[in-house]
Length: 459
Image 1 (cartoon, helix red, strand yellow):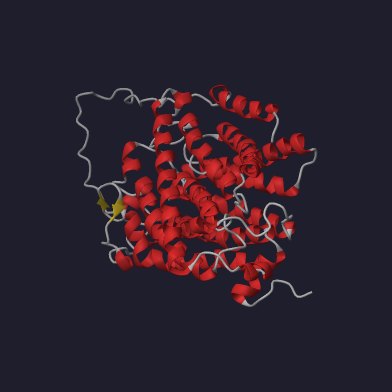
Image 2 (cartoon, rainbow, N blue to C red):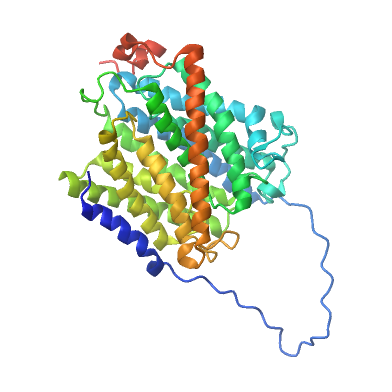
């Protein structure tokens, strides 16, 4: 358990935000040119023109979509595979790889319509865009006035694919592959799609309430973290846990995956500007800064607590910083990003250590990194958000708007509730239909052989 000094650092970092953040920019009104007569009427405004596709914005969105795809496979696939035992490496890679394929088809058929089409009671979209009917190559002003509607759809598809893949770290090394397929299909439909609509869909109740989530703190990270906790409790511990050591089998692979996640995260956050503009640049910069701060904070906290810094800790700190900055990336500046990333490094390390005392088997620390990091990031957005960074956002507590922190807290609790309760229900349904776990014998020989009849290494 980290010492008190580590936790005091986190508290001081948060309290220091008000001093570190630059004051909001003041926009000056332009005065009329010398000699201009105030009696001269301004010419009539031309009628609004139809939305026009911008090639630069479109190129950036396609690039960002590819970057987010890279986060799932190979990024997350290698990161998770390196952290499990050798006999489960291919099975773990397969889960991320197939999530990308399966959820992409679900998204085209009906997922995108549920998440982003016309609103039903602020809770879910309707089925007007089933099979991408009406989702063409012209812009939809609600989701990017300068890019084809399908470009926005494809970008969001990559978010939908990686989110259920994140949860797999909680039940790694013990779930049947067939049960996994049914679970992620149900989870994406009944949990992710409604949450995406709440936060980003026109008419979504959290969006209308003013909750700020630039790139997925609630819909992606809090939802996957809360669902991971539910999955760890329902599926149960791995055989031999915690009495038998279960160290990562290939840290080189895991760190390579973490580095690919860091790289792809620029598309995840900066791409959420839906344009190649100043806001995308700001999100790009704070994303990198937060990852660097998270890396250092986790490393020094672990060093002071355990006596030595570890490579796995540094990689985990980078991911924690990236998770935490995700909801805030379009609303905060670089100094705030340092505080957010460093806070994530300390808090997420502490949560991962606490897991051992609580006794649940979240194999790859999805709860500690994504659940805790996403929660901290969403709340930190309510502290450090500034309209000087994004005029379409809101000011946070440190910029004179304490109510924003309350709005963020409501968004956090609502996301947790839907994800946790919904995941328990879905897992119970899957368990009743086909069972969740492999047999003890199959778990003993590993998922690679028992589920796929393959081995990752021939020695």
